[in-house]
Length: 192
Image (cartoon, rainbow, N blue to C red; front, side, top):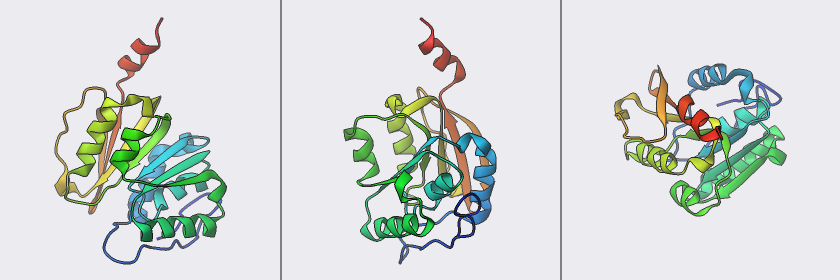
């Protein structure tokens, strides 16, 4: 597990001991950031169920203005802190020890450009957190993307009101699902 590009390119990241996290493969991570492209620069990135923090750190390495890492597990929190220090990106990273659901429910919404969701597998949490954000769009900039990482066997359509899935890609055991607010809805809300 390493940083693929940017200021921390090539740095090997610390992992979390035990089976509690599922790091994204370098292939899937490389594909994700190819899709995001230069838009990652100066963006605000929220890494929910952050694990080792490798996706949020990749965003920082590639020029994101800030990443907020939300994680509950103490070993994972230690890995995020160590990885931020290793990559010298700690000034733009904020670590929040919290349950992701409670974080979204109790914190004052701050709009993000990208929200990355990679909860523990096979519990249905990805759909639940997606539905929670769907009801709290104040967490989203108008053109924000939500990216969900799941195993392809977990996928099922999710009933949403304010978000739509606009892309889906599979890379072996990693599926990435991309959601956003429909363009028409964003335009209607901004018209006066």
